[in-house]
Length: 157
Image 1 (cartoon, rainbow, N blue to C red):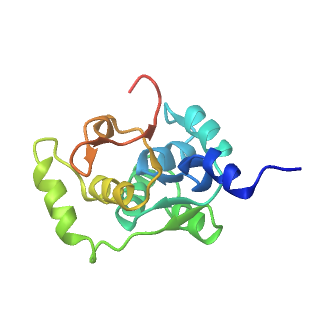
Image 2 (cartoon, rainbow, N blue to C red; image 1 turned 60 degrees about the horizontal axis):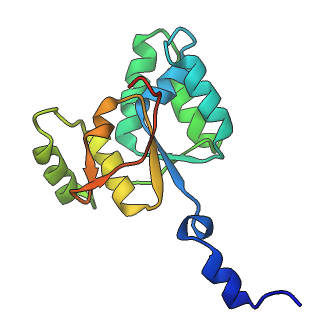
């Protein structure tokens, strides 16, 4: 006879029940789209192993488009990643403005960009989550003031 459902639920961890949300920063988007980027291979390998969609915010998309254009790529491809279901814009900066201001004031010595503040806030709102990034500042930032933010980043960052 199989074990009762209550026994099965007790053995499952919270991570098993709730899928981890991957939040993507501009760096990996740029690295994937620009073959000459030093992190292109690493980012492509990581990207291919992650189930879509990857979650992000408009500030990250703006930063990614700017950088892709600067490095000779087609910035429109960044938006096409949304229409293809690869990326999901899942953040309302207007609703989160007070928290974003607090985060940017807390980390004004780095300084913290709007894109970074949005990703930190998204990590607070969507647990469990991890930030897919090439930005070492995410090793400094804390969610809810004290919690380390899990990252998916190259070891040498």
